[in-house]
Amino acid sequence: MNRPTAARWVGVPAFLVLVLVCWPAIRVAIDRVRYPRSSFGALIESSTGHAVDTIHGTATKDLVGLPDTTVQIRWTRGGLDTLYALAIRDRLFDLPEPHPISTPQMIQPAFDAHVRLTAGSRSRDFRWNSGDRPTEASMGEWMRLFRFARTLDSMAVHQPNYEALPPAKGGYM
Image (cartoon, rainbow, N blue to C red; front, side, top):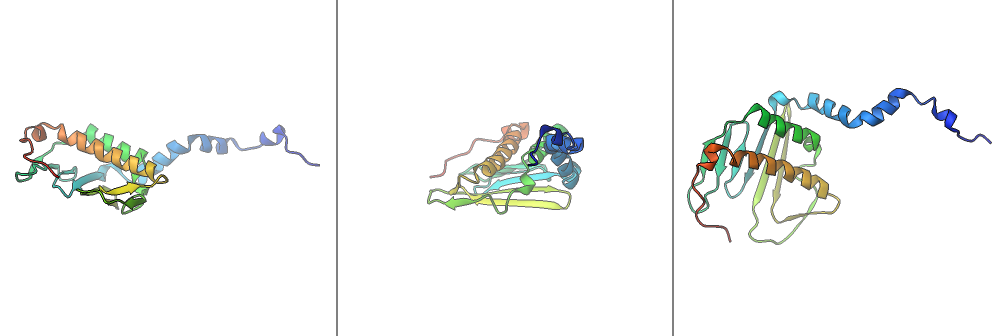
């Protein structure tokens, strides 16, 4: 009988082991070529009027009972690099469109949301309703998408031009 022995594994090529160990870094390097940083841009917007757009350098604040107001946002290279690194690390360009798997819920009020990512010739558009409920199988994908949207939003609302806007008047019921 011919039994496998440890000696037979010595013949495994070293590069195969190296590829298996280094695969996450290799994948990121491939994605950086597929989705170039030089053309990266992102947009988030909601049906309430709130929006952040890195390509046009704008952010719109939903003032509820007052007219929505748009201001210019000056994005730093470091800020855009952070967003790009997050999009690549979390493999957002590989998520299913229009959104990860969910089940609709009857939650009121419910608002529509939109995230667009662009890099090179690739563009990804994610759209969902706040009443959509992630499935257990898709929870990780939703968490990655929400993490990106929260990071982009947080970076915008802490910009001086945005912070200078008046507070919203009223609220949603």
